[in-house]
Length: 394
Image (cartoon, rainbow, N blue to C red):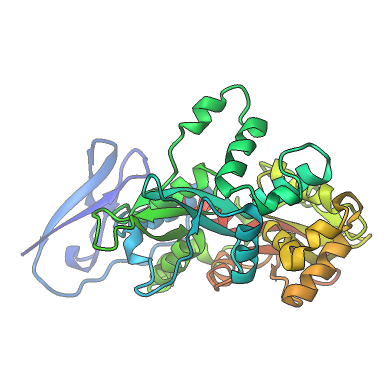
């Protein structure tokens, strides 16, 4: 006999359970703590349970779905997501700033772990945001590093200088803050929450036990990797998740324009081609978002400018030959096209289903979907990977 427990953790005054092994008769479930439970001793075999009808209560439907998603994430570790064979770049924190950013550009990296040889471990991350902050200080004549100093000052020196300007009153406290990281044995839900709550795009995975390499870093955990793994699990039984067939317009996910009448936790930012790039970058940093839709005078989508696109200015040291205050978004996009070529702008409709959105976002390289009106391409909203994982884990 197999001891099988069924539970209902979503509240209510009473709950019952039925299946082929009960003769389709409803069996009352008992309240154990905060959830209803019932236990059966079943002989090995195949059994049927009634398909779950779509809930009349959207909130309950979302709660049930999130519970099932959490079960998947809790029962799998980040080690299950890490590629068996992969390459990860690590930069020495003693490298000159200019050389570090040139390497990031040449390798197509938007962020990279920093190795401290003195401590014998990874102690930080160098990101596209750092490049933006350096350019802003250089171009606004607030002396942190001069152009010639980029050749000499190390990345670690830049990190210290950045703390002086952005650390606030408690600079010493920020210096003592340890690197945010996870262990290879951590479950996927905890890893996803670590990324979301710390507002970062990826987090280093440290090995639970040191191997002969002496390097504690296993890989980087990212939201795309977690979502791809989750989608593969959901697609094994899509009929068991009726909410996947719901249109995104009925689901609390993403950031939406005021024109849609939908409430959003943050304002939907857009920019025109003639806008100064520095204004666009300020929006990205201040709102802690990774991209902004570029629209024409009618609000129709033309392209998306991402924080990582700033790395195109490292090509042949272009940043040293321009005035950032004079550079428009259109100029920046043209530079991006020259360096990396034109790219596809990934979109969806407000009538797209949640399953369609998850499928698109699980494709490698897709970080966000711009929600557009099909005829005019008017920007109605944007759904990022972070928005999606935040919705899924609640």
